[in-house]
Length: 113
Length: 110
Image (cartoon, rainbow over all chains, first blue to last red):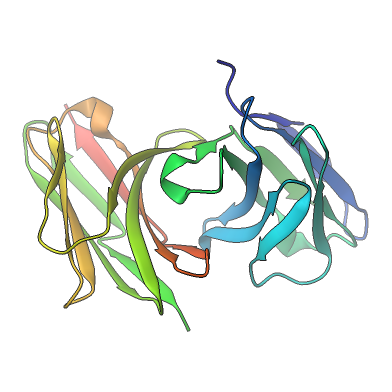
């Protein structure tokens, strides 16, 4: 069974630009969660999508948004990038959203200059 | 504000030593506590704890939860260099929020 895949793996953007990250879950998984990981704040929950609907949201500004398609693939968008958005963005998929059954992808390393 | 605090932040020990990693939490509507191991990029799930006093064990790793004192420990016995990683503790609430600690970076010297 193929694992969770994320594209791109590395990305460099400049301040003010926007970026879209993609996550393909494990086949059969309907829940996709996004996380931001930085050295200072650790791993922080961004949002969760289940069956194309945002089911949960963390404490991030509206510049961070996402969506999920009918095939469960998910995208995350960050608009008006700031230097502080530099981070590793991880997505995780599970069948129904159970935290203990989440499988994480390898992440996208975003650097904002 | 909900929070999960892990200690120590980093730890260096020699192969064969036993280590204990700590995780304390203040989370309303607690549902479960989870431990993950993060080696390079993707965290991998280790344990889920929901009840106090019941030890979960997997090989040389074990973990236990104290819901009265609001903490959990992760023990690793007879450590090996392959145990070097960041160990993450997370707490899931009943409203499906998940809060992670900042992790403990463990380095095992050969």
